[in-house]
Length: 113
Length: 111
Image (tube, rainbow over all chains, first blue to last red; front, side):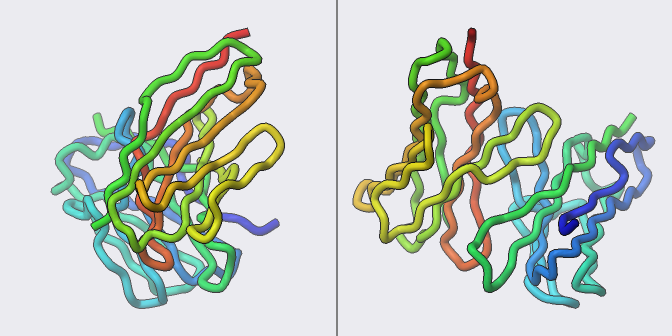
């Protein structure tokens, strides 16, 4: 079954700790994205990657880092520099030659205590 | 860069009524406009989309209209049902792959 898998689904961390959220896709998609969702603020783009070993900052990249060492994987690290990390994080991917539909993972809910 | 505004932020209707959600965009280069539905605690899923060479598209009870001149597009849901209750997001794509989303509309359909 093709899709995007995010883990963990729920994560609790203490303030000041770095956290890495996993995102794996088996759709053979070239481009992958990380969005942050807060109530009333829609989906805001953190980072995106159009090809392996390359990525670009989105609108709210400060305090986050990513890597794209494999086509299938696009992990997101929430660093201690992120001032308000508690949020719902969504990973997504899109086929370069497809219909343009963005496919989302199930999301990871991070709560910083 | 592209900016997408979405209204209203919340919408309450009675079952069977129609619901309309409106979005405006700023970048005239945008050529793809999808709508996503997100049920509570779940991932957003595409429900309908429209490209800039089309003015209207329908899929059963949902339809989307696009006015390129005014830079706005709308989602229309007819004969609403309780299962239509969700958050709906519009989006616009100025480049090939980077979607810009609106802030979402919470639709509540009361039986």
